[in-house]
Each structure stands twice: as structure tokens, then as C-alpha cells.
Amino acid sequence: MSGLYFMGIDLGTTSVKISIVLNGEQVSSVSQPTKADTKSNVGSAGFEQDVAIILSTVQSCMKELSPETLSSVKKICITGQMHGVMLWSSKHLNNFYSQENNSFDVQHTSPLYTWQDQRCSEEFLTSLPKPCSHLPLSTGHGNATLFWLSQHQPDYLARFDRAGTIMDFLICILCGLDSPIMSKQLAASWGYFDSSAGCWNKEILEQKSFPFHLLPRVVNPGEQAGTLQFDWFRIKKRTAVLVALGDTQCAVYSVLSNPDEAVLNLGTSCQMAFPEFLETVPTFPEASSPIQFFPYFNNQYLAVAASLNGGNVLSQFVNMVQNWIGVFGCVKSKEDIWKTLLESSSTTNKNESALIKVHPTIFGERHAPTQYGEVSGITASNMDLHSVFHALCKGLIENITRMVSPSYLKQKGVRKLLGTGSVIHKNPIIQREVMTQYGDIVVELGRQCDSAFGAALFCEAMDS
Image 1 (spheres, helix red, strand yellow):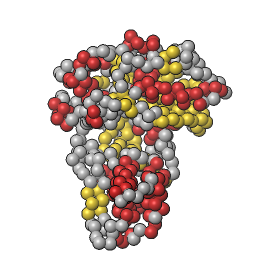
Image 2 (spheres, one colour):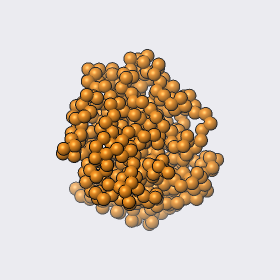
Image 3 (cartoon, helix red, strand yellow):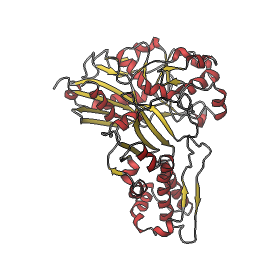
Image 4 (cartoon, helix red, strand yellow):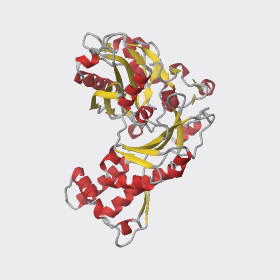
């Protein structure tokens, strides 16, 4: 069995997952939460994570896999949270991993500034030069964060000579790379990247004294970044490691099997995505468009409508209910509230609840940042808890249909919609609304996006 397995590793925002596949089937997987969030020196605007904790979680996951399975791994592909950036010094590279103890010893790096980071205000972003890219620049994007650090913490930034995603950093350690190598998928997520030309906006960045020397070399997805420089548990030295990929692309890749399919993934947030060939890539983004195009695989782009409002809105509603009943001295766990809401959904008066209209965009949207939530159509008889909850669930799906309508999908050749994600899996109201509102398209529920599995599948495809 030696040399037959392919490993995908996902360094997600809240967890690490490892998937091992053989002939397109998952033969082993393990996942653990990271709990890596750490306090930021810019207060609530900063979203940072401890790199050492994340890599320690990788090791913990590796320990759960059987030595026999690991000894048969032929190739590795790492994916993870896009947009984020971290910094390190190349002079410490050989000290980041202890072969003697088989453990990471990560010191002298910056934290991971994640995609959720809010330190770049609209005023700050407006002050930056306009990118030559078809993707807009937002706070939390790697190059926006580097711009902020160069202007607000230049002495701190000067301590480092390398930058990359945490996936790129892990690959540098495993492969002994002096400088990081980044895929086009991740480079595009940082901003100031010309996807058509396949290069950074060097001249534009240097106008504002941007630390261009920090940026990684960029290559196509599927290219080999290097080989293991040591035996990693039972995975053999010189095992090939591919350049890191975006988690959104890998998640979609894990479930799509035909070119006429699209994915609706509803978890903490919500994404509608489908692959598309673009004859020409726009030079500049269409700011008001809810759909963006990210580099995918095989010279395709992934059309993505990414809503900031998903399961997080429902969780906020449950928190509100818990706080309200707490005012009266009643104690109910969130689990009990969820159970009551979901079990009693079938008893809701549909005629009355239909009158309520909820626009659930309480977290805004990237294409409409000043858009807030609204509730209308309230009557004396439809303010019961279940009617409001039903209207909220319906509003979440209506929000995504406004971003990507069924007619738009059909125009793009989409014939089947795959509903995935924890919210769709657990919530029967959401399931019904997806089936109803996208009724003109075949809807299939039940599959689960898995970035680690997608990375492993792509890894195996590149070997065939």
C-alpha cells in the first residue's frame, strides 16, 4: 500500500482537519478545534490568532492518525483560511521545528492577522492606491493589513523579512524553504494581485512605500512547493508538498462533480459558488456586484456570492431570546432554545408568518456595507416567537436569492444546486426555503463541503 495515499490539511479559522484519500474515497480523517484567538493590541478591531497553538493542533491531529496510514502518504496538499497574513524572520526558520521532540517550536513570529480583522477603516482603505485587480480591497485582506502595519507599526514590521498565509508558513517549515511560495488563489485573496498577468501590483504598491520585499513568489495551483526535509511522524522525508490552496476553492471542489452544479453553503456565513470560464478578467472590480470571481482550478474562476449573514444571524437571534427571558429570571440554555424553535416550526401559522418580512443583514454585506437589518409586516397576531423565527429563516434565503437569483444560475448553465453546511443540515425551515425559493432548479441537500477532503482530492488528481 506504500505511496498510495494523499493527504489534505485544512488550517481553518476555528479548527484543523486532516483528510486522507485513496481512489477518491476518504479512508481516514481527524479534526480538532484550535481555540487560537488571542488579544490584539488594537483592541476589538483586531482579530488575531496564536500561530504556535494552530501548529500544535496540527501535531495533535497527526498523532491521531495511524502510523501505517501515514507511512503510505505519497503527497500532501495544505489549504486554509484565506486573506490572513503573518510575518516571520528567515533567520529563525531552522528553529521552528524540533526533529528531536517531533514538535513545532514557533517563536519570534507575528500573530496571524485573520480575514476577520477590522483595523483597516473605510477612511484608511480610501487613502490607499487603487489596486489593478478585478477583486476589491477590504479590511482583513493581507496586503491591506501589511499597509496598515507599515504606517502604524513600522518598527515592529521591520523585525521580519517574510510574509505569507499560515499555510505558506507551515510549508516553509516542512520543506525548509527560505522564502514562501504562494498560489494564485491565496494571492488574489490578499488584494493588489493581477489575476490575468499572474503578478502583484508592484509599481502601484511601491508608490506608498509598501514593503514589497515581503511578498511571496506566486505560482499556479497544483505546482509543487517542495518536499519534506525530515520524516514527519511516519510520513517519509522527500514526500512532495503542493503549494497551499484557498479553503473556499477546496470546499467547493470537495462536492462538485459536474460542470452544471452550484454549491450553496450555509454555515456561520453563506456562500453561493460555481465554476466559470472567463474569457477576459475585469481590470477593476464592480463595487456594487455581490458576485466576485476567484481563481479556481484548470484555468477556471469560481463565481462566489459571499454573504456575511448566515448561521451567525440565527445565533444572534437565539442569544437575544436567551437574554430576554433572562430578564424575567428564567434560565434556558441555548440548546433548549434551539430545540424549541426547530421542533415547533411545523405548527407556525404560515398565512400570518408570511406577512412578516425580515431583511436579516445585521452584519451588512461587502457589496452593501451600510445595509442593515429590517423587520416589516408586523400584525397583532404574528408576533409569536415561531412566526418571527420562520420569517428570519426565510429572510436569510431571500437575501442570497437577491444576490444570486435562480434565473441567473440557469442563465449560467447551472441545473443542480447542492445545499451544504451545518445550518442547512440541522434546520428544516431553511431546508424548505431553499427547496421553495430555488424550485426552478434541481436541489439536492445532504452533502457536506470539506476543505481538507477537497485538498486531498485535488492532490490525488494532480498525481494522475
